[in-house]
Image (cartoon, rainbow, N blue to C red; front, side, top):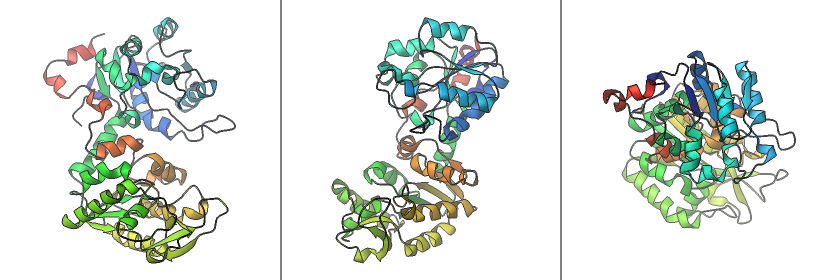
Length: 409
């Protein structure tokens, strides 16, 4: 981690604008928060700032309001949950910028916490408007990015505010960079990547980047159909990415040249349709019926994956093994989650739906690290520079004498 963090600066009695990722799932009927893990993940940073007497100003987006005020996407329900967790009142502003918001911030005392209204009620947020970024910056003395999950976005609250305020990393963002960076720079071997999900195209850069670092690649989920098709297996009605067939073939060839073991399913569960009432049957990958589609990995595949993963010291997992939303087609995914939770290896969960799975199964605490960033994690592991991380001050700022700027009132 070569960026300054909240530990490197004096936050006492400072107004600290913290970009968090409170884009939590809401119950469709009641509007209540159905999973508060993103809030929980940022608590170490929030509590660190409170304990040191900062005036904490939290800002986040929620949903996709498209630059308009949507009452169902107001931050009120989030503020209520944060208040419950912290055991102290957390207010919400009527807007995230403007004179009234500045007045609310001006009334904060050391240790107080305030949540700004949904950033995406303003289209200027996603356009990285300099004027909007300046409006946010007017609220604070210091900016902290603790929203790793949105740090791949070029939005005003991610890369614009740092043009006006000294910008450092929060404790969650620091953990993300250290844990994900660790499996790129110095993983304990054998090192395996367990990959699923629907699309090969989403993971190409990451696959290319880690190919020389992993000892084994295990592929399941919908993306396995594309790999199987590229290996001349018939996959019935399974969705494949036609444009990625050559890519899949190239990755298999590259794995062979690099001495990387690449395990594809040997058997799969297939069904007539992807529906809650559908019934599955297990077949070998050489005998997939033309009128059925792959919905999960089969028991022999689970066994071969078990055997491979049990011998590994580092495992990165991203993507379900099947249509896990339908219980009867989620066995492979649940089995992999239980296995990883039982191992002594370093287990890194790559965010997105995979993180939701282990959290919902109550297994997050048994994993080494569960990332909060789906797309951000994949881009980071793909070797891309994340704009939100790049915009933060380097550790070299201390050597350059720029800490005075950070600690000035």
